[in-house]
Structures are given as structure tokens and as C-alpha cells.
Length: 266
Length: 248
Image 1 (spheres, helix red, strand yellow):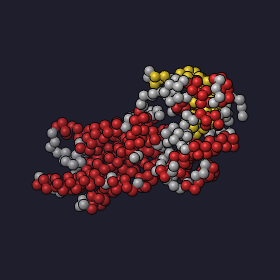
Image 2: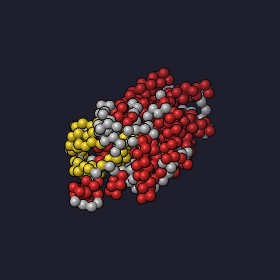
Image 3: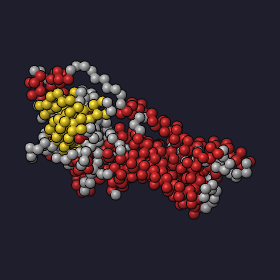
């Protein structure tokens, strides 16, 4: 493992019209670490993940993932990461196995390896018993586990998890982080996560960056952040860094689709 | 190739698994066939145009293909936020292959649905002039399916709001259907209406099917197929271009 950061973000700005979602952000993530990206709603977390995962292009600044620029080397960069988005991206009308298999084809994983690794991952994530069932019959926790397992199928170097535990019960959250930790240890995959649960970040992350209003306000280990702010919990440190004001985001197109989906799904 | 194949297979598998949806989607074609077919049948006959069901069956098949193709493409809007589309957008494969796989899948589903309605029209009394014409009719059906799946992909890539879906249904899909001559003959139309029917690709699809199946055509089968092919190529290129522009 080299010292060269696996993710490098330098002075990145992303504007949508007049709104600047990410404003001169810089940070490094080292290979093999679990990096938590924390911030209130609308702080710029998801926008940053979308830029690193090639879905958005930065307005200015430089990005690097495993030494490659996601804007100019999208295909090579895509091979190197797995991602679990905030909103589900499974096909619920297909089985768990079919979801895994399609992913393997899309990532050009040879058939034999695809099958072996899909089986191993489904077993590890305790989904093997249900591999032939349609995803729509799965619980929220099972769906999330399946998404993570799928994201790991092509042996990525970085795994992005955007609020993976949103809406899960404490048991599922606990189980999920244990699995992610184990995988990080076993395969050395770098994990880049966002969450609103400070206890989770405190427990799993090696290093944390706090972002607010599109700017990084602090970086360091959980202990360092507590020390910097003179607080005794990460939650208190987070509130001290970002303030206690509630953020009202204006509704986006995504919100309108979300509302529609809720109405349709009873 | 394997990428196109798995994405195509995904659409087809999902269709074959959704039995309830298949049956539900028979509703509106059956209503058109039943209510319009039998309701307007006597008038049509008195006007000396022959049996209305013979005339209308190709129109209803065309309508089914149009609705199914447009719907599967517009479902993309949903898929983009809550579904599988994002998974394919970050995959290390060219967007073009993804678009082709999805569009062919959507088109195949539309053809299958069209075939189902074809059988239904046969049950309610539609009689093609010769069975040899059926494969050629399916070529026309496939072209209609590809045209509108590609158009739907372009629309699904361009709009973000769910309300946009209603707009598309009311201002695009319904006019495409009503202007196509699916339910009335193209002869002797007022000039303005005639002009509109001529820019609707479905018009050529329905006319082509009629030409093949019952030997009655306004433009001629060759022109119909040529227009469908041209529009098909154009729409696939347009759809691919819009799809390549999606930012999540």
C-alpha cells in the first residue's frame, strides 16, 4: 500500500446555477481507511459523492480516484469503485441473484468468478437463503445489505456508502457496520461513507470530515474532533461545528419523484 | 454484446413476471375494440366502408404498441431516482450500449403486448386476408415499438418531474394515438387534420399494418415502411444522445 491518497479532492467547486453546493472543498482519503463524511442536510455530501462517482462534473477544481480523474477517465474510475446511493438502486422485480449477476456482467467480471464471488458475498451478508427470491419481498435491511454486497462484487478499491443506514432499525445498523468493518479488514477496501448517526461514525470511521454549507469545517479522527471542539461526544462536536439551526432545503425534482413514489407504493 | 443482452433480458423477464399488469393492460384496448368497434360498426358499414372491426383491429394493435412502448420508457423517470437506472449509469460500460439494451427490451415488451392484442382481435372477429401477411405485419409492429421506445427514452432522459409524465400522456401520447387514423379513415379529412396525421409516425405504422393485413392502404406499404425506418433511425439517435446527457 502506497502513501498516495486513493481519493484526492482539491479546491473543488460545484455550482448549480446560482447555488454553490460545494465550495472550495479539499481533502484526502488514504487507501484502506474508513472515511466518514458528515454534515447537515444540504451540506454538499451527496454532490461530492456524485462528483467522485462520475455522475456530476465539478465546476472547477481537481478530483482524483486511485490516481485517475473521474471527469476524463470515467470508465476506468467506474471499475475501481462500488457505490450504494441514498435512494435504492436495486431492481425489485428481479431476484437477489439476478441483481448480482447483471452487476457482474456490467462490470465485465468473468462468469466463473462472478458466480463464486456472488455466492460468497451473499453468504457473508446473510442473504444466501433468499438468493432466489424477488428483491421486492426483502426487508429494508436486507435490501441495503444486498446493495452493499452487489457494490463489492467487482472487487472495487473504494466503496461509497451514502447514508446506507437511513431508515434501518438499530439491529440492522449494527449488523451492517460490523459487516462493513470486516470487509474493510479482510479485503482492504477503502470505505467512504456519509451518515446522520454520529454514533456510527464514531464507531467505524478512522477519519472524519465535517462539511457545512459546502465547505469543510473540520477534519480528523473522532478523538481529534472532540479535542478541537472541547466536547466529549462526536454529536456535541458536530453540533458545535455546524450549529443547531435546522436546514430547510428547497424541494428538488428528486423530492417530487420521492413524494410520487410514496403515494404510489401505498 | 453481453451488456445489451442482459439489459434486454431484464426488461423481458420483468414483463413476463408481471401477470397482473399484462392482464390489466388489456383493459383499454378491449374497451376500444368493444365499445368503439361495436358502437361505430353499424355507421361504418352504412357508409359503405365494410366491417369496422377489420378496419379498427390494426389501429388498436398500433395503439397498444404505442402505449406500452411509451410507458416502459417513461418508467425510466422513476427508475432513475428509485431504481436500477443509477446502477447502470455508474457502470464501466458506454451509455450507448445501456440505451440500446433498454430500448430493445422496451420494444420487445411492446411487440409481445401487441401480439397479445392481435390474438384478442382474432377472437373478437378480426380476419387478416392471409396468414402469410402476419410476419410482415410484425415487422411493422416492431418498427413502431422501436420508434416509440426510443422516443420514450429521450423523454425519460430529459424530464425530471413526475408531473411531466402527465404532460407527456396528455399532450403527446393521446394525440399520437388520435391523429394516427387508428380509429377513422385518412381519406377526405379536413386539410389541417390531414396535415397533423401526416407528421404522426404512428399513422404510417397503422396504415402499413392495414396495408399488409387487410389490403387497404392510404400511402402504400413501401412508403409506410420507409418512413418508419427513417423515423426509427432518427429517434434512436436522438434517444441515445439524450440518454448520454443524463446527470444524476
